[in-house]
Image (cartoon, rainbow, N blue to C red):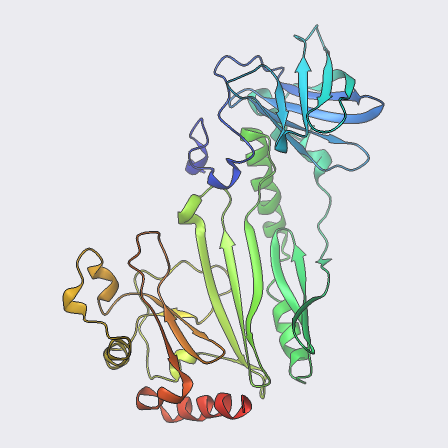
Length: 368
């Protein structure tokens, strides 16, 4: 977990909007505390290694982050929904006030008793706090989302993982849904790793951070289905982002590789990392395909300057099915070098294999 070491969260880009760098001399009542905010029962924790914390109402068990900033002595709730003003602890008792920031001014008393001091400087990651937030995970089913007329999907989540369940007129969707359900790693090791990561972040910055995992249908017709899986590993910044695509032939229900429509492909050394489930979305283009696409887009590789590596034969591209053509696109890294080329289906014939020609013909005919 070396990416978690920076004291001002330099490596925790996704969390910076919640946790500004605190005053260096913050008085931290480290430990796990239980008591009341107003009349509501709460449990709070405070870390000393990086002054931070969080609390939850016993009724809801949804942690609300607390952090310190340079300009004042308050503990700020995430989103500045409230401010905590705490007196120095007297023995095992901690008192203070909560006040609203927005809307009608409200002030409520805070009274807490020390419940667990075994967590040391990382009290929020201790069993006394994090353990109260953990329950055996179950598959959570989201609301129905419409993709197109007659086609919809629901998001399924389990221990930070996500897949989808599809609903539409294609008979093969039932088998594909069973396959997508198998995306979940429900093993004891996977669940332990999920909770361990949450505890690691709780103990360092007071937030039970977890990886951002999403699955989305990108292309869906009567003939073909493509799904994009995306991951942003918590605390890793841009280097923690990875993705892959999967495509199914909806006539057979089998997963296929659109790159095979152009012959053999080679895996790029710049290929984003894939997890336990891998896809077939990205690779390096064959020389024939590369020449064809560059001619189509009017690209002259000899004129590339600072972006030369993007034009080389080993460069990575994602291949995706779009409404009117196939898109070959490099990941964007913010330097403006990425190449993106979309070719209409009707113009791909010179570089397609016989299998590819048959597949693209189905795409064109189904669109009529």
